[in-house]
Image (cartoon, rainbow, N blue to C red; front, side, top):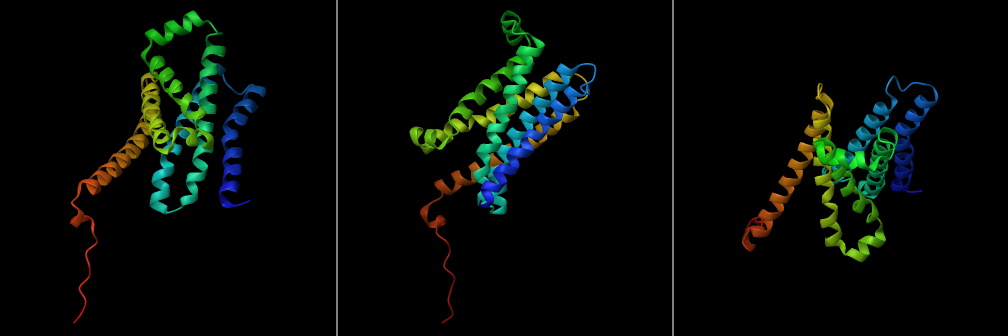
Length: 213
């Protein structure tokens, strides 16, 4: 196996550790007095962590010139969706017991749930179109445009967490800081690209060094 394949296997195993830890705690009565809350927060945390990790792949690849990193982005992104599904399932099953009337009322009346639900819905097309086949069907540029929704998803996810927490906002603000850095990098890269495109042809040429006579 090459480096990318080995890394994918390691990421796959590592990404299952939080789920295994929750399962271990559940079977050994270690989820505390409110196990639903523990499961909800844990799966939500890991959804955000993996989304932010996915967003960090491109800057890491460019800054470190480790181009193989792009090969593991899809795996991390799919695990972000996986934990998002667990987070959403915990809410509709363990918390609301599939009471759709109550769920719809929650989504409509509680802003942090509205935002969180919107973030999860945006993850669905990203997960579905993550395969090479979909990239070919959509064309590279259209696929890239669609997958920029990951930034919107990340913003909504962070807002969801900030609005959810009523007292200690230390952890959600940490996520907000990381997301802010990643967004600033993206804006800076975009501005640099636009500057290069709008520069006159003479400015794009590399200056020719003077040679001695």
